[in-house]
Length: 113
Image 1: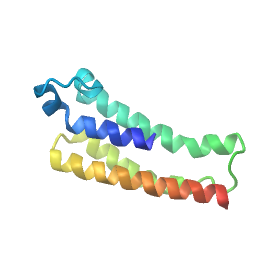
Image 2: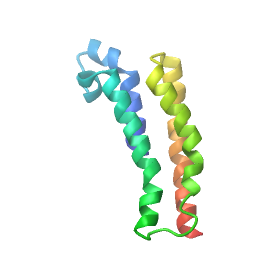
Image 3: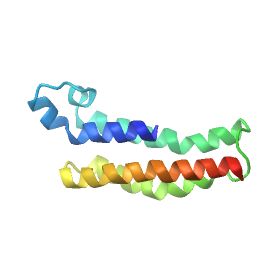
Image 4: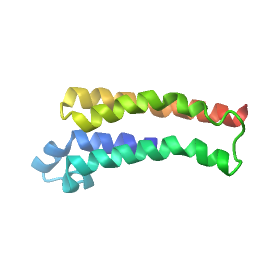
């Protein structure tokens, strides 16, 4: 879901230029509001995954480790939902990639501990 969030945020940033170039990506078709909602949905599903994995007993007691990234998720949602500034969205795009890396490391650690 976090890889998809990177793609969705990239498309959110590029909506206007894609429309001007005649590229009708999903984001260009549905608009910034729905694209922002897709981004939020990706982060919410990713955040829920450790709890679901714990509920079906696929991870141990350290299942909560990826939840250490939730504050970063909150800041990213704030940037994606409230900003159309390309510089802000570029920064959020880089931070989403960093979130993906950190979340993945913590998720892997939760399986190993």
